[in-house]
Image 1 (cartoon, rainbow, N blue to C red):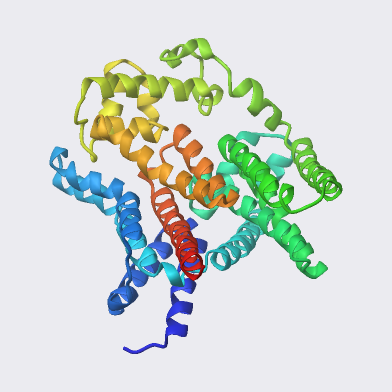
Image 2: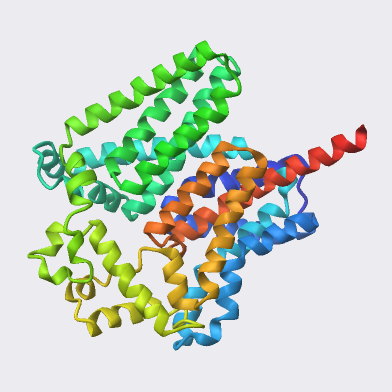
Amino acid sequence: MTISEKNFNKTINFFLALIAIMMIFRKPCTLLIILFAVFNLFYIKKLNFTKQSLVLVLLIASPLILEIVMFWNNDSLLKGLKSLEKYSSLLVFPLFVLGHYQRIQFLKILRYYCITTTIIILFFFLRFVIYFPELIQKYMNGKDLWEMGYSFSNSIGIHAPALNMHLAFVSISALFFVFETFRLKEKWLLKLGYSIIFILSFFFVLFVNTRMALFNALIGFILVFFAEVMRNYSLKKILRTVAVLTITLSAVLFIFVKNNPYMKEKYSSVTFAYMDKVGKLDEIKNPETKVFNALVTRISIWKSGWELAKKNLPFGVGASDGKLELVKYYKQTHQHFLAKYEFPTHNQFLDFLIKFGIVGPLVVLLYIFTIGYLGFDLKNALVFSFFLLFFMSNVTDDFLLRFDGIAFSGLWISIFGSYWLQQKSLLIKSSQSL
């Protein structure tokens, strides 16, 4: 099949924008990734790699490579293959995104992703209000507010922390585009549009209400502010921008917290309750209602995971057996609450230590800090915000076990890598022309 260079470039970027937007829907997104791979196979001769892009391919594919190298350690061939399949996108994205790095339009893809994802979540929010009035009424009356974000996420078909990780990045990106419209002196309608997208996206982060996503979003706002405002505007405009941004965020926070009193409780007494019961959660009466999402539960899990990992050094228990062995350990140590709900590690570094031994957390560090390096070298607040978002999310959760963490990170690292390669190419051309 023949296709013009212009149409090929448009198709590649359309695919990437659509995959990014559909990332919160596992099955449609998986189909899109397959179609993207098949499309690229038809035009495989168009791929173009440099030494730098090949290094990035290996870095992005490192969790998949680790799975392949350590495949022998799985007790079950079928479960091992199933675990391996989850990481296939870490081959597709680096090959077919970095292989076309000169064609990738980073900001255009991000813009479509940011706007469309916010609109989709707004649609599902309105749907939630209309189709689940009994839940809305219950939450309006201040009952079971702890479950609100999880109920909303479940109505979409995604885990709340995963959804909020996406929404935090959307909100940070929306703020970037707000600043960009002012910097480029765009029409007021465009400025208003991006401001509305930002306010909505931040509201959704609050509505889903997971702690790390909110923390990471606020850190991202600060980074984007310093990068886009401090270096481009006078002191007078900076102070004015700080005032407007502070008032906007404070207003959204005030309205939300006023109607959700549980939020104050969640971020104080609930989070740090029963810290003297680490590893002894069964001594708490009704732990499901009191410490299900508390820090003491996370630390109890980490304590058990660390003990299990130390027993299985240097090679771990195998990729397919990590959670199974952890649940067995809960039972062996008579931690009935943790065993009943089969809690995973909630820490990606610890999870890979259990599965793969000493090399596991090193690969996680290599993978995630690749994003950090790209952001630092580009001096790009968006990329560095993504690094902090994904790093912190994997300290308190394990997103390299899930499609919405593996594909999400693999896609954006590949896009960031393409942008980095473009900038390096421009530097080389400018130095040659001097």
